[in-house]
Length: 220
Image (cartoon, rainbow, N blue to C red; front, top):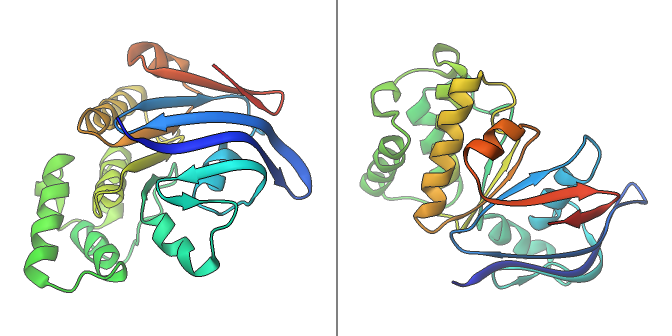
């Protein structure tokens, strides 16, 4: 399996403070990785460093074919297309339907063919079990349905990596389980998934590689 993320001796600073140091991490395609740790332990800083929202201070860091130490500003949008990001707070456009949310993303990332756009929207909605809810606005969807729509949005451009930052944080237990099962299914189809979570019940229920952020380092 190809390596999609490789960090070697990496330090990440945030507001001139050390968020993480001496990070060594390799993630391969199709791998599911849990990232756990207390609030402020560096989980979000690690994820944000991967798509160049926070700079790498030291070490070697690569995502796909991009060197995060030397990446040019103009190349960052292309780096970010390697990721689908699943947020805890959904970040959906509330003034339009589920389908229109997905259409907006495809057009914003350069899709122009209407038939191809329509086809891709139906594919991802089917993948997350939301085809019958395409016409609804976010406020008409349950929390779990909104998160499924967020996962559909993350899948649109077939990214090799999904980053899920506390994706079950605002959901009840049963809905959280269905979301994690969905993410595991995505990994089984070849997409690397890194999920930050506090929920050890989910980790135990759906076992996978486990990495802990503690004392500003990563431990396996």
